[in-house]
Length: 433
Image (cartoon, rainbow, N blue to C red; front, side, top):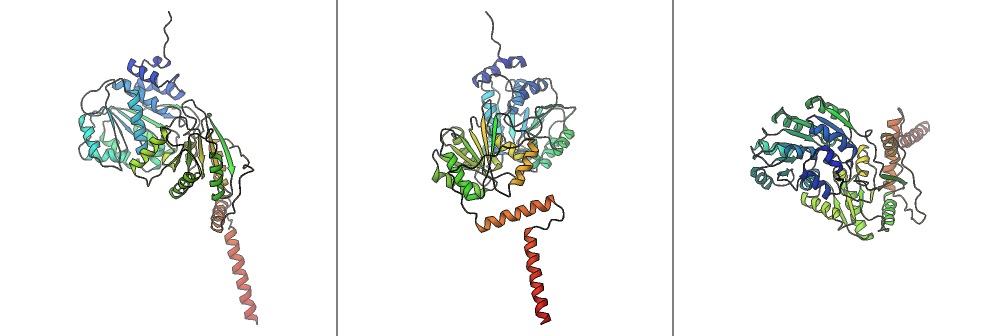
């Protein structure tokens, strides 16, 4: 009788991890997992660059759990640093499910909440610590975190950490943890500052680069609507979301917190299935509850700023809708990466006004592909653009042209010049009289 070998068994993972993988119904390793896991198990320092939603977290967690194997001592042996509270909790949840047949202990520490409970858990003894840099340094300075036992360091979402200004804290952490350790750096992109950071603390790293930087995953279909103004964008959003069967689990992204609040209130009135919202001004518990409620399918729509664009692993999101185009162009890739995850397909829809066309072209240049333009539905009523919004769009277009064409003075400058010339001509006329 032939014995069926699970694909992950080729990595020589122990039975406890294989059982957890089977419970998750992971059929085959992703490309980043196939390339990174053997290198990490072999003790190499590794730089892993791959698109969001390609299994990076399991690519470093599985070999990390395999190396730790079981609970031992009181102090952490592995430290995972990430940029946000949401990602800390996401990774902790992944550890929970992958290590459920082991006795490996882990906890997460992050700012924005009181440290008392986090300190109590750390003092009870842990093997893996998942942390934001600021809270880690805080507890280290208090003498709560003992670092001499740390043998593995992971920097996840390294590009985002540097974008958020965490470099000084990361350097401080590198100074206090043991120099003899394995270092793993994972990121969706590899800008110069990430390359510089990796050169500072990784020793002869093996690079695992799965896709060209800032390339959307193929499982995500992209569409673009050109929409004249905010009011028409809101009407189009409500019109699309009337189809509750197709749009059954939707994330709507905005740039500004106020826009997110306004859109969430609008959708609560106009759509079915419930709405939650997360942005940086929301309390930590509110954000966690909103994500959990959406993840569990208790509400259909999650409205968010880019605080939720990275690292949040929510399965079977049917659609990502960019109500506003991000001006940090890499965020487009991270936003749409919230759908089409874990072997599912998804759809990303973007709304752009006249001023946002410029950013669309820059995004297309970054991702090296055109985003297909879709005509507006014939039943969509087109609202008039308010004077204030017209002025804001015109100013933005002027700024873009000045940036692209040296010496361009802009329509506002031309109007001002015409008024000034006319005023001067009238003055000269009066003077002659």
